[in-house]
Length: 156
Length: 191
Image (cartoon, rainbow over all chains, first blue to last red; front, side, top):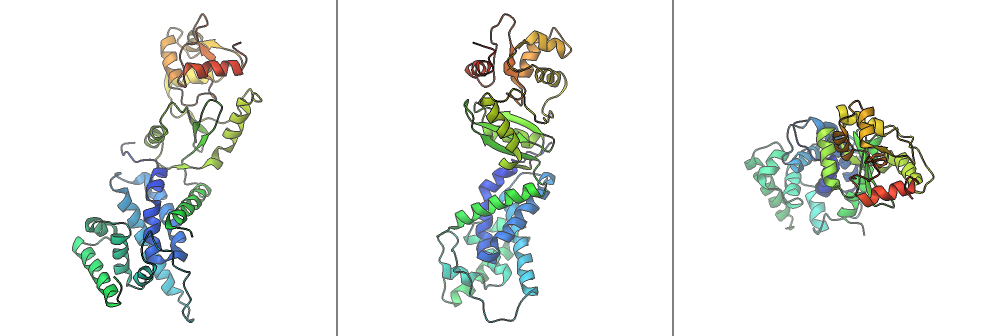
């Protein structure tokens, strides 16, 4: 084998919390585990075919990003017309203000993901662009727009 | 209150179990406690492929497996339950023979023949480097046989501790000479 990929367990040990934190912030506590399972199963399936072992964190977050979008779409499809269901008390990602994160989750998907990548995982814009398959400028723009919306609501 | 850290750990454990169920784990490993220290044990779908003494760095052992066999390496103790049980029985003196399928893919050629020959030395007996080399097809390659045994990927189960120098000197051992002596005493080959 020519490509030096680390044992998959090491990816799981090193990045599980980053992936989970991102998903928790974007799809919410209830769906985070499902998306996490989908993300790592997809990653494990594809892993041996990976061409290089550079920036595996971004690779995993790219998959997580796609799964979060899928979950968001699926939720739209099964939208049920009932009065607002109270969310489970938010368990804040790391030390972040829970009120802030419930506000983040009502941002449009692209802004929400960009804000989560930037502030949950401290991804540089270069990596956010990779993960979201957009330009660095577009990534910066999404974060800026997301923060502007949050500011309008008196958060942040 | 549970934290993101706890939740992500729980999710990671659920993932590992599911990956095993879905047949996505090419190399399952676990750590085993034994009277001669912790072992890292790894198995493929074919069978037990690696046992490593604590003298080896487990990170390096896993790197090596990832590079040589497959990077789909996950900690999955359930896949090594029979290895754990049989080693426990062996160390308690209740098992004289292992009933495990082995994956030999980490060795080739003369080395593999030496190890396969060694696997047939019965419990409680010893052979010599020269005799093992002869059975593997080259009686003059005692030194090469010694080096093959030194690189044994599955010690204990492939009992390289049962090979000593002509004349009774114990020779060498990857897990340390004291361990070799301990094993031979356990088996009653040394008093």
